[in-house]
Amino acid sequence: MLEAQPLAILCVSSYEKGQEFIRTCKAAGCRVLLLTVEKLRHADWPFESIDEVFTMPEELPLQDLIYAVSYAARSQSIDRIVALDEFDMENVSALREHLRLPGMGLSAIRHFRDKLTMRAQANQAGILVPDFVHVLNYDNLREFMSRVPGPWLLKPRSQASGIGMKKIYSQQELWPWLDQLGDRQSFYLLEKFVPGAIYHVDSVVSERRIVFAEAHVYGTPPLDTSHHGGVFTTRTLPREGQETKALLEINRHLFEGLGLVRGVTHAEFLQAHADGRFYFIEVAARVGGAYISNVIEAATGINLWREWARLEVGAGNQPYQLPSARGDYAGVILSLARQEHPDTSAYTDPEIIYRVRKYHHAGFILKSHSHERIQQLLDSYARRFQADFVATQPVPDKPSS
Image 1 (cartoon, rainbow, N blue to C red):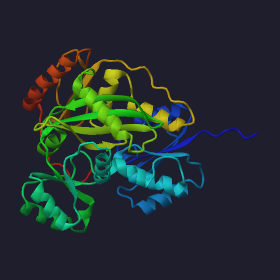
Image 2 (cartoon, rainbow, N blue to C red; image 1 turned 60 degrees about the vertical axis):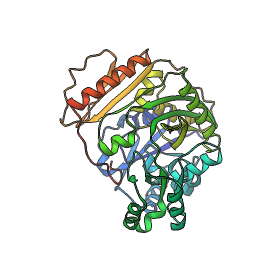
Image 3 (cartoon, rainbow, N blue to C red; image 1 turned 135 degrees about the vertical axis):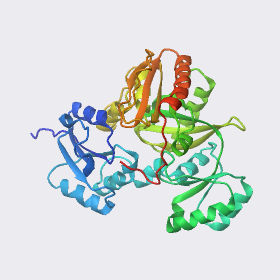
Image 4 (cartoon, rainbow, N blue to C red; image 1 turned 30 degrees about the vertical axis):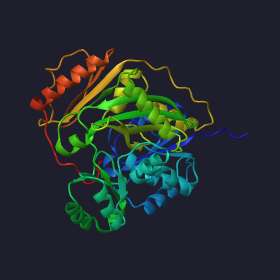
């Protein structure tokens, strides 16, 4: 009788992240393969949990990626392929379809990568979204701008973190931007800019059911901090508050139509200043960036990378059980810093449980039993960071690893 072979998981990432995902897969008995870009070959990966590392050039064409992974599969089995970063998800979906492996294919991943698709799906589910139009037919664009007062946001359909977005104030301003885009215009949408507070809900989904969800509120909207600089913050919302209950209900309703079987998600919503209603902004089938997963773990004990790995390894064949969650509160503050290695020793509150050690960055993870204390500290630190550290740089037109 042949001995059962360990499950082989290929992790693909153009960015240095997902270390806990890799460790969890290895601890579960998997054979773990990592495919990353050449410049990250010697990055801070958990090499003790990786059986083999492959590298690829940045922006490798999809066809060449299929050739490379198919070649590797000649000598070893590959049972799962996982994109650790959002920008690798389309390519990984294409690899799954080509190799006939479990997981979301190209059509399914559009619900989590294509802002036009996810808006249409939310609309169909009766969830409010800011008025939008596909940048495709010019008569439709003119009708939209005549009917919907500006300003508007010109958004790439498959980017994140404000990358590539432009704020448009008049019809005359739009057309030169479209001329610059040329044949890439159809990969954009135009959306009404709705001033408001931005929230996010981060979830664990097992067999199409949300088994864990935490609601948070950003300080300054991420679009503002990415385009104009400043201090990024987010914090756990009071769990019994009306905002939290409304967000969790909209989040649950949203996922009923998205078709995600299992995994982790990061969804963003806006509460408009004008009418107080919640609008859907976007959703991704990944762990939230900017230390959001650290905030969630500090508040609840739930590590989203670890739970995502457990879901992938089980893949519906093993019953999934969410660990018990705590009910503390947490937050993160983060900014670009003028100094290469900022000195944060003047910040001494015991709620600081982690200090960001990153080149030209300053930041902390905070934890408390009180959501009021977290909010108070974030507000105070945001003012101090402006004087002590804050630096700015232009938002990129495309992501960089």
